[in-house]
Image: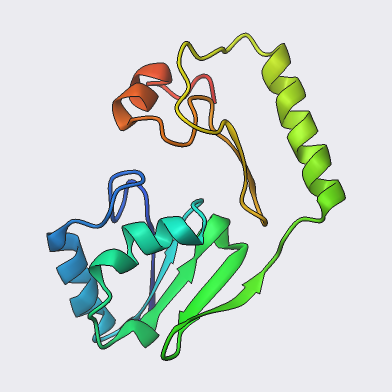
Length: 152
């Protein structure tokens, strides 16, 4: 029997930025009864609360669930409540340099979005995220914008 099973969140357990559906939540709860499960994603902690925990809050086996937001640069584990065990945050100087570089590359790029939904550059503490169409862009808009991943 495997001791730990690791899943990506978006595109594996759930549609991007969407909550687990009832079937997936049920399967995950069953798996938590017999194994530790880690879920990793680029999203920040509030995104995990919305996508994962909103459908698992009644599970008696949350201590077997390990959550790794921002590509694993943060780690949360359950022990009567959710505890952040670590967060590898950038310094203010590092953030400024990264954000400045992203904005410069974006300004110099030939890839311009006709419409943007939400923030394009988001500071997640331990990760700076660039979303060409914005953080709240609909899935269909993302697929149309870069169907073959050539712009990424």
